[in-house]
Every structure is written in structure tokens, then in C-alpha cells.
Amino acid sequence: MKKTLSMRKTADPKELEMQEKCDLADAVERYQLKEIMDESKKVKGFAKLWPIIRPKPVMFIGVFMLMVASVNNIVTGTMMGRFMGVLSVPLDDKVMQKLYPDSGLKKAVEILKYEI
Image (cartoon, rainbow, N blue to C red; front, side, top):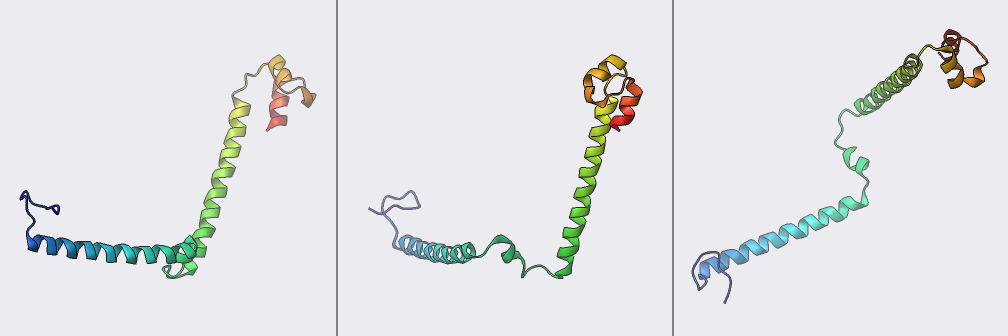
């Protein structure tokens, strides 16, 4: 006995016919999707997007602006990290001499100037 979508025990011929049509449509769609996926696996991601991008010079301007913004964050982070490392240390001559023994300086203020 064939499964039915309704609660009846026997399958209606119209229901079976419609179910077969739906199964056939699903199989066709799955086959088409498989073909599309096979074609897209041959091409890399950026190459798929390149025909869509219009106007193309905007892409290069965007990449350039992204580099400018990234460098700004890196420089700011490096400088802030350096300042926080220097300014968070207590201004005690003995402590600073232990932290920076290779500097050869004796006073904490001189060591801070050397470090900045």
C-alpha cells in the first residue's frame, strides 16, 4: 500500500498522480542545482563576483581605502600600547632600573624619555 498524505487508508489516484508530479519536479530541480554547483566549483569565489561588480574602479578604490583604514588602526594600537606600557609603570627609580637594566640610565624620568 502506498503512503498517503491524507488520513485515508487507501490512496486516491489523483493524490498519487499529484505526488508523482511533485517528485518529478523535485528531481528536476535537484538535477539543475547539482549542475550549477558543479559549474561553480570550477570557478573561484572572486571570479564569480567579478562580472557582477559595476563600475569596476570602485572595487580598487574600496581596497585602497580599506588599506588606509587598517594601517590607521594598526598605528594607533601600537602607539597606544606603547604609551600604556610606559605610563602604567610606577615612577620609582629602583623599579625602573630593574625593568630596564640595559638602558644604563639611573633616574625613572630619563628611562621614560628613553623608552618613548
